[in-house]
Length: 85
Image (cartoon, rainbow, N blue to C red; front, side, top):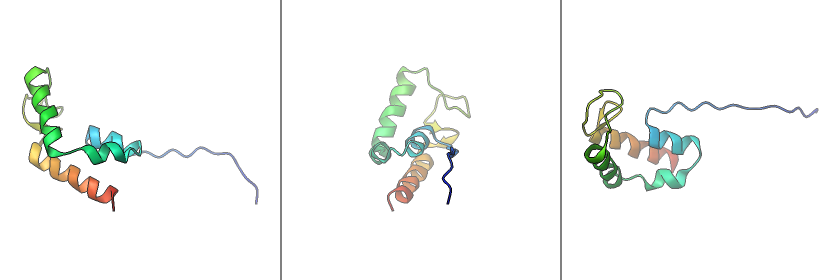
């Protein structure tokens, strides 16, 4: 068998920035620390001291990429479940 040099590119499409970046980088330690309480604190700060708007709705609201906060956190929790199986 002959060895060859090659580059493998893996493309990870992530809808959510924080979880997507952590997952793509293999940084499960970051993904593990994402909690609803922490994410709400971050979102509150960005809304209060902005300027921060939802990237899809372009409104100043408690949503992430057009998804209401509680629904967003349910998705993040599912990503964490899969990552830590």
